[in-house]
Image 1: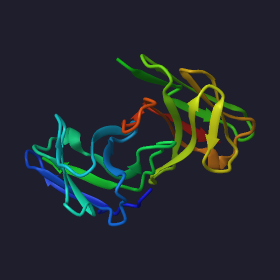
Image 2: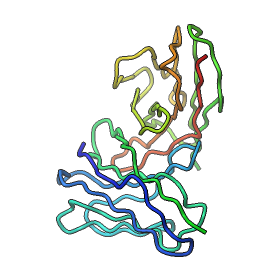
Image 3: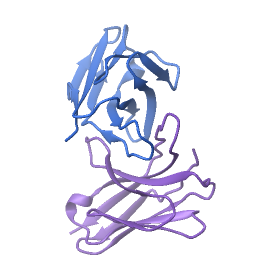
Length: 111
Length: 113
């Protein structure tokens, strides 16, 4: 699985959009981009995933660049409950389907 | 709907004691099951995964073992715990189909004294 690079930490004001970047310059054509988050002392929560098209669900939007070497997770109206560590993962969708988590981005929402 | 259960939520064990953590999944059949460990301040490390009853793959050599006696049950065990086994243990599942996200349980925080 390709590796990802994320900023260690970010702050965002409550009510504003939180934009979390992720670089995955070695991503291969059959790898998807997945985003999870982990609130302290809880299990990771799935947010969204995509291959090459932008995706949106009730939680967030995922913007993937045309060359697929980077992506951005957007939380449109951040709340205090969005404070968490956010993980960007790329993975192949066949075989054992394991996930490889890095250290992620610690997002803090400021009141 | 599908649900995943892990227990206990927290556990304190002495060095050298045995361990058994259980994970069960309801509402789905033939799931892929995973055990991860997260050390303090670090990312998740995959320990074991299983694609079916009795089928276990180990990702890293360690003091732990896993078993899947039932389709819906995944057990993490140790005969003698080490201090380095402390951590946050997470079970996850995914449908057997491709391109499906993994869903995690609430985890077990294990402290070895």
